Structure formats: C-alpha cells, structure tokens
Amino acid sequence: GEDVEQSLFLSVREGDSSVINCTYTDSSSTYLYWYKQEPGAGLQLLTYIFSNMDMKQDQRLTVLLNKKDKHLSLRIADTQTGDSAIYFCAESPLTTGKLIFGQGTTLQVKP
Amino acid sequence: GAVVSQHPSRVICKSGTSVKIECRSLDFQATTMFWYRQFPKQSLMLMATSNEGSKATYEQGVEKDKFLINHASLTLSTLTVTSAHPEDSSFYICSAPRLAGGFTDTQYFGPGTRLTVL
Image (cartoon, rainbow over all chains, first blue to last red; front, top):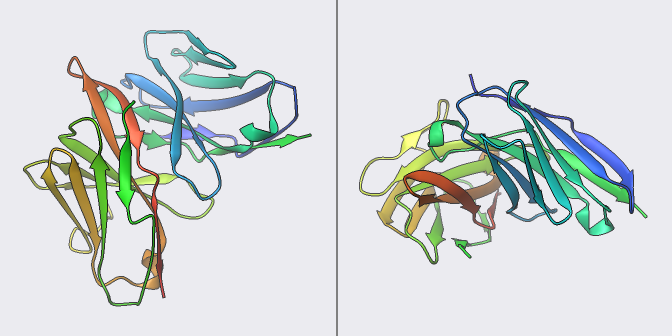
C-alpha cells in the first residue's frame, strides 16, 4: 500500500539546523518531494530527489534518501524564523503523477 | 518557472448551492491535473485525477456526483462542488505535473481555494 509518515512537530532555535524525517512504503516511487506550506497558503515545492540518488543539496537544504530503509530526511541549515511552516514529504508512485502526502511536520523556529 | 493558478482563492456560499473552482496551468500544458482536499491542520488528500479529454478518476470514498470534474483543455480543469454543505468546507488545491522525457518532472501546485459553506 501507499503510506507516508512524518513526525508532527519540531521546535528549533534560530540558527540551528532542523532535520525533518519521513518514511514511505512504496518502493516504486520514482520521485520524493518536500513541500512547504505557510498558514493559509498553498504548497511551495522546496526540493525533490530522484530515487536513484542518495543526497541532494540545494543551498540551505539537504535531502538524504535511504532507499533500503525507505527513509527520507530534509535538513535545513541555519534555520530562520521565516522557515516556520508545515513541511510535507510526498512520494509519487510509479510516475503516475499523483502524490501521496505525509501528515506534515510543523516546524517552529524560536528566536 | 511553471505556474498553476486557481480561481477563486476564497469563496463563501450558502448550503445547497454549487461552486466551481478553476485550475489553470499558465505556461505549460497539462493532460493530467490532480485535485486535493485539505482539512485544517491535516494533510492533503487526493480526491481525483483530472484527465484531458476523458473522465476523471476518483479516489475511493470520493463521490463523483458530488465533485464534478471537467478537464476542458490542456490548461484548464474545473472542480464543481454540487449542492454544497457545511461539511464540504475545506481548502481545495489542484496540481499539475510537468512531464519531461515521459516521466514526471515535478508537480506544481495552485495556491488553493478556501471554500466555506454556511
């Protein structure tokens, strides 16, 4: 079946690194995504990783993929108050285009 | 970059009325679009896949007669919530995948439509 799990809440201090974890079940997923949602707004694509990659870095964002364990993480370096939002990981099984989302992790950044 | 728009961004209607929400891909063609629903403080749940030129594919538990989907062109999909009731109040988000080389490149989401049914 298709299922994506995330921890619900993470609190960090400004300047620290944040690590948001995600596990998924569908090994056929070709792409795995991280989205950010600010209050009352739609989804903003942060980054994605192709399933044959282990790591992808994009400025302050680092995505790590452990395909064997079906574990995905998003690291935000030097976390800022503007990073406070809900972060969703999502998998896209069999390149169908549809996304299966995790519950979302609320990131709280304290000054 | 690719942009997906939704209209309206916010709608308030009376119970029993129908509401139409539009989703447009602005600088690319999308033969497929997706409609999601998000309840407060919850994740996005896929409602249906909108297919240009053919019938939409609904996820289990989604009433196709309640949520009418029409994919009229390669850049426009509409979701009509028929005979809306307060329990239909939600945040509706569409997305469109941009294909590259036959595989999904990435998906772009609209800004969402907040529906409130009184």
